[in-house]
Image (tube, rainbow, N blue to C red):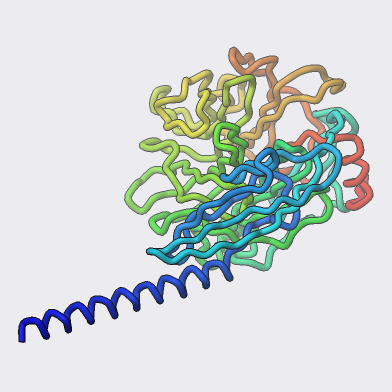
Length: 417
């Protein structure tokens, strides 16, 4: 009798094992059918290669490791586009499947020198994205494109677009545009969009992808404001950062995630804890990342102003950044400022060689102010007059561009002067 019972138990174990094995085989087959790579049809930069999906693990190998590594780093060929096969090995339990995906790597881009500037912004009266262009290689003289009408509007979420930011890829021929999904003017806040940002992508500044509604923030936030991005060579990805007010925290807290494609993002991390901070923007000089942030600066009499810090690690926490300057607006004679943007002048700019910091002054009247300095390691800020676009811009980004790009923009979005 005991022998019969043992045989029955063994039979059940065998059946359970076969059932699990059968289920695992179904899983890996389903994963193989579902698996894709973002931008496989035209790779302009590093790729996100999934390592897990539906409980299965995925490892990758490349048929041409010089052009694509097994972790997705891309080196674009100089002469022509090249197809490379990536093989995914999918495993769950003892079940295994493989899938080959062909990736077309676009040939390398040769970028010309920058001779103009594009200003992407919204305005004090309209929560939509506008484009303005410099008058030649002049960081202080501007006109609005597209007849003064917005280039981007939204039918997603709140339908408001604020705080637009644009970044050029390190390869030079991809542009990512992002914005806050928020409708604030006239108290019209719209539906709850506290965890999302809006993203567009282009290779020529004129033909843009469809608007992407991207979830980046965790569930315990009250908002996701002023998204920006900067390339981090050490990880071969963009660091995307924004400000959120956490449910458990009275402070506005800068957070970040990383991405290679602005489609797939890592889990959000806290970047600058335990202090009220908003509106971060970053530039890089040599090995140093320089970060401008609007803060209530406890170390300097709770100054409501812009602080400048630097670090060699973009993702370092607040206490690992060195303070370079503080109360920048107040010390330059324009207190109560926010929404900093920073850019380096182009070679040959008619005004000379400077770093520019543009800021919003919101007390007693709302206006825009341009400051400049010769360097960031020991800045001496001075206010300079500027011919800003009309209507007056609000919170955006200035992107140095080539003469050809300026010509393309003027043709696509004619100005009225």
